[in-house]
Image 1 (cartoon, one colour):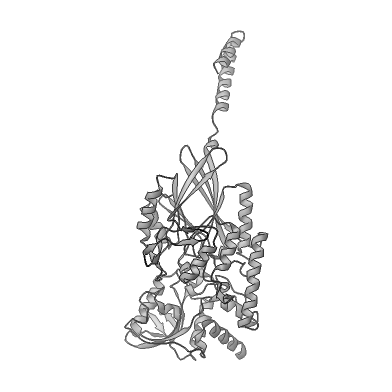
Image 2 (tube, helix red, strand yellow):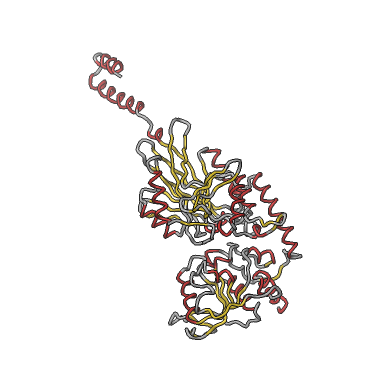
Length: 524
């Protein structure tokens, strides 16, 4: 620099001084700019692909949207441009699904198909959702052992004779599922960023073999153990969104939380924290682009909700695995129903099986299901109720409904119970469902409405009498107290619970619906 200035000064003595001073100044400015470090040299760009609440491996609605082979194609395409691309599952993928209910070699799949597909997709990090614990301990252990991706949980432990311990994966060695995970990202040019992950799951599915620690204290403990070891801490959670928001309030230095549970996409800002959730069944995925400045420690987040539809190609390897399992499903269903594709009912308009609708409003599909429940007891009930969360198809159903569609709608199956209960309790149950609009506890109803003027509950057009005894058909799940904690056979306002025998239509809710729909077709 000094040599260059000296040379220019010598040159200026032999020319016009004013002109040379201007030229000298301009040269120095340009020289200094050229020597200044490019700010982008301190930046690392990486991408996260987020899925949550995925129960179906194949596309839905006749192939219009969803499908994990399409997600795999998207991920491969992004990685071709930016190798620092990582894929996450924010819980709920082992259960429920119709495919998971079929038996192979005398044993139900119970998520085996999902593990094989996810292994082929090379997921980087997953956590437990509440429905992972629908599986008995033995089967959950099998699925853990089969997985080739990293699990994490900060608040869930396995109950054993020796006390509560981490869940583990048994292969050649036994590996405990950690409460935290550190992802180190190298840009290939000497830049590096380390991200610590914590993960908590809501305790909505109590099982004897599962111990849930408090969501917030577990997250705080894990955050404290991570914060000094990494550049930043992020969350991979399976919580209700209000819990995610509370977590963000308690740990305001967490910049980002990928969550699940709600089934509908959202991007919520809580303080300095961004909370994201994609649509269930991979109808959409989130693609998050992060730009981190290693010098200033500034993090920029650009989140795009990306639709997975028929316009997207399928990744060949994953598609082959999906085709294997769906082909097996066709074979197995035919062992139960001679012609699962037989049209059993024609609707003038498509039946709404979407999660967002059935967890928030009375739907035409909810009407049909609850009508069938009452019909299964020869309509000798005052009303019928099923929780919206039992309807898992998350799809607009075709006008021509088949037996296969019914099994997809209610993969949990189960019986229809006939319950005698006091009007007081019935009103409390209905109030609880209404208060929990947007969740699986919202109730689809038959012969129950609301007075438009007073807002009180009506049954058969009449106000519910708190002292009167009513007979109501319930899905058996509702009487387990999972969605509505006080609705169990032990409640003093439940006078009798009738469980159907094997010969009765009410023994299997799916078969009851199929028979009911066939009866409507016959009548017409």
